[in-house]
Amino acid sequence: MVTIPLSQTQPPTVPMGGSGAPPVLDVRGLTKRFPVGGMFNSKQVHALEDVSFTVDRGETMALVGESGSGKSTAARVIARLIAPSAGEIRLDGVDVLKSERQPSLAYRRRVQMIFQDPFGSLNPVHTIGHHLARPLEIHKKARGRREVRERVAELLTTVGLTPPDEVAAKYPHQLSGGQRQRVAIARALAVDPDVLLADEPISMLDVSIRMGVLNLMDRLKEERGIASLYITHDIASARYIGDRTTVMYAGRMVEGAPSTTLLDEPAHPYTRLLVSAVPNPRAGLAKRAIQVRGEVPSLLDPPPGCPFAPRCPHAMPICREMMPGIEMVGPRHWVRCHLYGPGGTTIGSPAGPATAGLATAGPAA
Image (tube, rainbow, N blue to C red):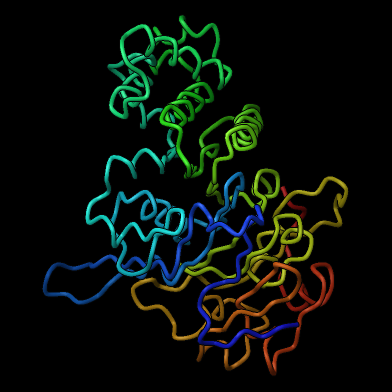
């Protein structure tokens, strides 16, 4: 086990391509704090604290966490819908926050976002064809009505919406939720982005059509070499689509690894909690979801140490006093936890000592 000093704040990341070129997306120390209570109140919501990661071309990184973990805030900051309080956002090695005070049209083209609500992101008074034609016209990806129509038809066919001419003439309310989300994906692809930010893209869809959307996103990543950030509360879907997965809790990153490794060998107690809630048909009644007592700490007044310490059954005195550093627990597998540092007692396998002392629920549903 390798210990990285506490002063080290950036989790180790390894580009997938191996070409030596900088990653497409490189986020360093990203922080976002929202002021509350008006101009005379100095309190702030610590929504995002010191978040760092890279995403290479043709790679999908999954960002996993519960509501309030900061994962959607991270996406909105990267999309530059809101300004960060601190940190860097680099595209192909260029710090865009320093080079551009306001996001340029070129940045908007290179970084596209798919929102959670497939209906709210589409204007109900415009046809599907109009939704796809506008970005083509704004970013000059097609010229003239004929070329625009051809590109719209091509985009609809790419995302599996056929016959394209009929779909283009429809309005959002005439499509299902899954079809609307495919339109949102087509609109993002219209401008040939380098980075795709997918914020809970399947959470509002019927279970029966979620896999189709995930398969579409995975296929497009392979075909177009897009660097994708997949944001979700569902760690099982992260395993399916993510090359790597990073877990967030209370605005901070707590663990990261290749997706299969993270689900098979979770290290952080919070990650183990998430993994235990994933249904496993093979385990049957023997599969019992870990439960912990307590609540997520206030983001207005976060504790000085590990944010999970108040709920962690393995917490030591140092956990409540000092933020843990980064510990390497395997190849490309890091965890921010004192249990794996000097003086810590490494917890066992997910089915062993890690569950000791935890209350258990019935079979995972």
